[in-house]
Length: 128
Image 1 (tube, one colour):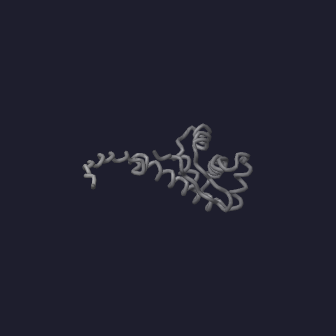
Image 2 (cartoon, rainbow, N blue to C red):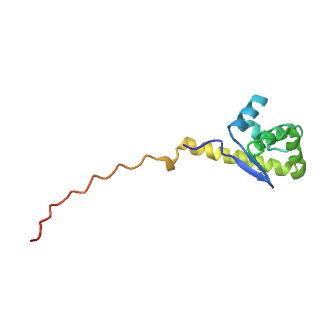
Image 3 (cartoon, rainbow, N blue to C red):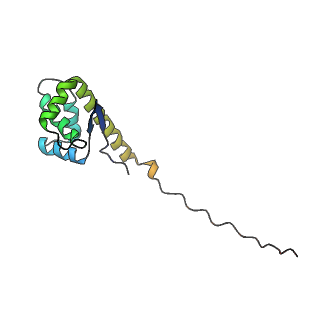
């Protein structure tokens, strides 16, 4: 079974990973589904920076549990909202691909084929 929370992207040495904890943080804070929030946070426009900063913070915490909202803001300052928005878009795309694979079933986890019956033994004559 695939894990639908597999989205991950990098911004330099900052890794943004969508895991269950990030999903819960974002959904509890916003009251919205993760896909809607990620889509909105990946857009650059008026009023989007707050959502972007919160999502960056939530996604940073898998690899940097000590991260704060201030750290997330510094990431946005360092790389720019456009680059961060593109990284969040990659996270969303990877998460969507994983969810789609989950819905279609994972061929890597298909049932094993039935074992073949044992070969028949033939009697051998003793030489002698």
